[in-house]
Length: 557
Image 1 (spheres, helix red, strand yellow):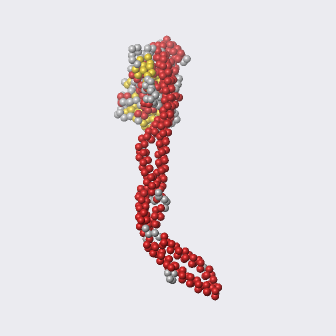
Image 2 (cartoon, rainbow, N blue to C red; image 1 turned 30 degrees about the horizontal axis):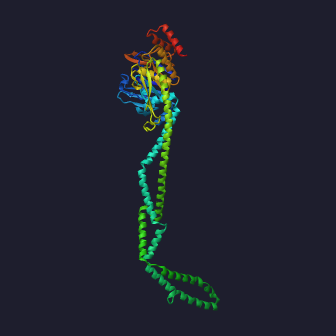
Image 3 (cartoon, rainbow, N blue to C red; image 1 turned 60 degrees about the vertical axis):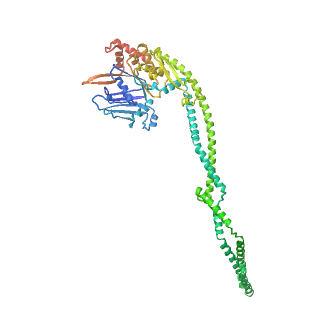
C-alpha cells in the first residue's frame, strides 16, 4: 500500500505531498490540471523511463519519493535493507540526464525498481498495459477463478521433482562414456597387480635371498671353515674344551672348589655344539643356483615396475589394488543408481501427467465460466457487445508431447477480446483504447483477483466514454476492489468521485507568471463542492450542491 507520495519539481508541480490510506482514493480536476503528472511520478518509483523534460522549467533537479507499506521479505532477494514494514523508494532526476534511485537509502539501478514494482503497485491506463499483456497473469486469474491454486502448487512441486531427477539422470548418462573408460582402467590396474600375486614382506625376503645367492660360495666356505674350527680339524675348539674339562674334573676330585666350574660345562659346550651342527647343516643346504638368482632378479624387476606405477612399496601396491576393486564396486552402484533414476523418472512423469491433466480439465471448465462472468461485467460497463474468449495453448495437450510440460501445467492461457461487433478476437495487450482496457481490467478484477496482497492498483482513463448508470457501476466495482486492495483512480465523473474514501483535487494556477499544479486533500464540505463542480461546471449552484450531497450520502451505503 502506498502511504505517502512526495513530488518535487516534476512538470508543473513544484512541491506536492499526498498522504494516502487504504480504500478508494480519487484524483479529480479540470482537464490539463496535472492529474497525469501524479501518475507519471508514481511510475518513476516503479521503474518507468525518465527524461529531462519531466523536470520543471528553470530547475536542474526533480524528484519523486514514495513510502510503501509492504512485506519486507520482497527486498531479501535483492540484498536490500529492511526497516519494519515500510519501503521508501526515491527517484532523483537531473537535467544533465543523470539520475539515481534508492530503496531504503540504498542506491539501486532503475531496473531493480521494475523488479520490485509487481509487489508494490500496478498502473493501468492509456500507456500502462503490462499487466494485461502478461499471459502468465491470465493463467493465474483463470486458476484463481477455478479455485485450483493448491492443484497448481502440487503440479509445480511434481514438475520440479521430475526436473531434479531428470537432471541427475542426464548427468549420469553424460558421464557414462567417461565411466566406461574409468572402469576399463580400474579393471586393468587391479588385474595387473593381482596377477603377480604379491605378498606383504616379499620384496625384503627376495632381496635377502638375492644377497645370499650372490655370496653363496664365500658363505659356504666360511661356514665350513668355522665348522672345522669348532669340531672337525685337529685342535678344534670342542676337542680342546673336552681336554680342559677333563683336567678340571681331576682338580675337582682333589679340590672341591672346582666343582662349580664343572657345573658350567654344559652351558658352555652345548651352545658350541649346536653352533657346529648349524654351520655344518648351513653349508649343506646352501644351494648355489644361477637359475634361482635369475628368478629372484626377474621377480624384483616386476615388483619395481609395479611400484613405479602404483606405490612406493609392495604394501602400497596391494592397497592400490584394493582401492581399484572398491571403486569398481562403486561404478556398479552408479549403474544401479541409473536404473533407479530411470524408474523414478517414469513414475514421476506418470504422477505429473495425471495431476496436470486433471488441472487442465478444471481449467477448461473455468474458462467458460470466466467468459460468461466477465462478459456479464462488461455489459454493465457500457461494453455489452464485447466478447471474451480464453485461448488455452495447446488446445488439446498430447500426453507424449513433453514439450508442453511446464511448472504451471500443460497449457498457457491468453485472454482474447472483441470490443465491438465485427471485430476479430485479439489479445488484450492489443486493445487500442485505454478506457476500454481499464474497464476490461476492472471487470476481470471484479471476477477474480490475482494481485499480490497489499498491492496498490492505479486506474487512469477508466471512465473514458461512459456516464450515468454505467459510471456508477464502474465506481461500485472500484469500491468493491478497494475493499481488498488500495485503489488510486483518476476520474472526471461525479458518480465515481462520490464514492471516494479519500478525495484529492488537482488544480493549476498562475503565480508570478509561472503555472503551478497543486494537490489538495478535500474535507467533507470541500468534497461536496468538488462533486457539485463536476456535476454543474464552474458555476456551482445550491441545487448542484444538494445533488452532490445526496450522491455522497448514497455512496456510503
